[in-house]
Length: 287
Length: 235
Image (cartoon, rainbow over all chains, first blue to last red; front, side):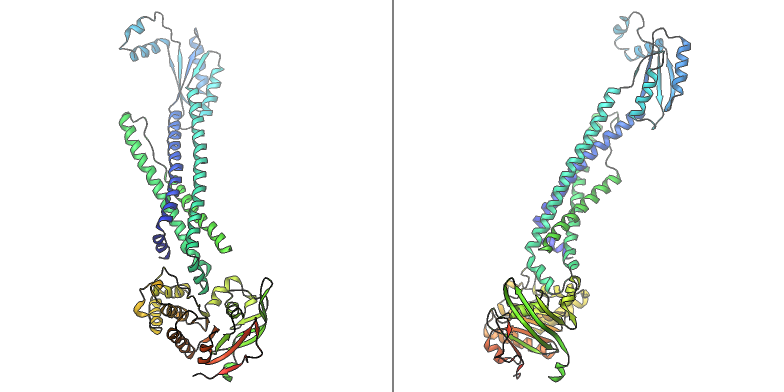
């Protein structure tokens, strides 16, 4: 009750503290949301990735079969399918059926025999794919291997950069919020130092005097966390509807933060509120 | 009086209090008995307020021993200080009311701090405000009250927790004669109900019109001239 009364009496100061915490949560939450989605997309892409193995020109059927068996024996490989150069051309033609002139000008079939390597679902990450591809490349009948390695590496680097930037920025803003919450509590304490003095004189324990301030800090942290997360959620809903209408295929479906992440963010906000109060209280009661 | 003297509630043994190099109290040894009305008097700067502060640990002693109701204040832990202070009801010259709280809530604060039950708090606050004649202004804020009214609220706050000892530091210093008489009447009433009252004042009229033992301080020392055990008959 006393804490709620105090919040009402110091609406402006409390409002500033809540907004600062909300801003920190917004920044950390936005980075986390983007990172979560990129990471999810990366995982989905990795699990659906196929390695295309192009065989050397003139590779015999026996060599093709031998290569197929050897790839099949590699750890993490689900299935290997042989695609002859004529099959590849047929597929290519089917893709370009509206521009037959392009195919007609080809003359001799330029496509090589190939193997399509399907990887075990969920068991593959970028470094494992790299290792499989490396082993296949060293096989004698293999001309080249493709699995979009360059863009995957770039994407992985981008993800790491995002995570790092999010942690740094989020950390800085959380520290700033902690200091602002501490300052708010200190200002409220100074504005009520006469009251604190009277409470001490009438025999109030330190716990009795400090408890409302801690509850205020807790409410500030939780409210700030709630407002910040709500803003992130609103942005998520907006982006989600935008992207779904733009990419009707549903290929890019945005996910919101997990329950665990939400819990951690709220926990951090409340923790910041309490730590801020603790810092100002320690200084005030030492004087 | 002999009955009171058998049981001291405050004991001081060779108490000294210094602020830096300035000596505020020098070698004070005395007993104050249960249900006594004691007036600490002396000129400004004689150490009257310091004397009271030592009792509720508003200040620590520099040297010597202070014992309140059997508790040696030199040995009390910081954690126990609030519980010691609940033995006292303290009245200040500047009232020390919280301006942002109503009269009612100023008194409630003491009982909340003592951990009283909410239902009992309401009853007690009404009762003490009635005692000091301020029940009709319980919703008022202190700045809207006269000095005499504010001091009556301060008295209500001091007695709300039913303390054994009332400490009053120049309680009538800022009041007109009528209000001062009113406050003194309240203090006498509290004393008659069994509390020990220790009043610090330099108001000669008040000293003459109030019964009780007078302790005279001059430059921080008990004065030899004014008998420290002098008893003035209660009018």
